[in-house]
Amino acid sequence: MEELCYNRLMEQAIKTLFETKEPQVYALYEQLIEMVRHAIGVFEIHPKKSSIHLHHGADFLGIHPKKKWLDINIVLDHPLEDPRLVHTDQPSKNRYHNYLRLSDPEEIDARLVEYLRDSYALMSMRNGVNVG
Image (cartoon, rainbow, N blue to C red; front, side, top):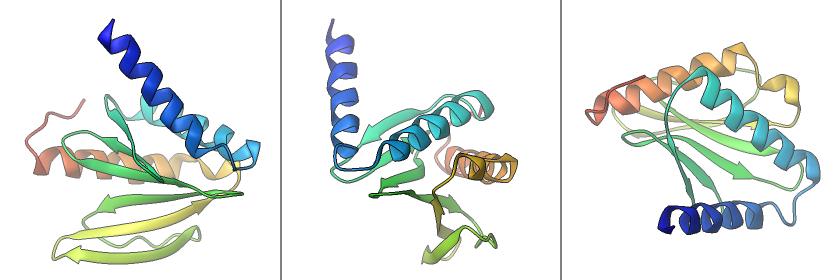
């Protein structure tokens, strides 16, 4: 019963993040989550005040809903070179936050899957969590 209540609260917190966004933004989010579930593995969803974090040992993906697109933050040990890249910062010696902008379902592609697999493995390994 507690888990059911938690899931409903989490779903409501997520839907609240999309209330002022265009409908295609939520559709992109759902597509991204399904891709991660099928292509990468087990993870937890942590809704925050203005974003959603995917967690496996540590946060490996940040999702930031905007009015007409999703900005995502992929944590890696190197900067990315990708046309969707908006910004990269380096919070520590071996960690880079790569910010990509997604506005079209076709941008959720094999290349993005590869980035997310690398981030998932990196953040799991750094925190002693088994991958897969």
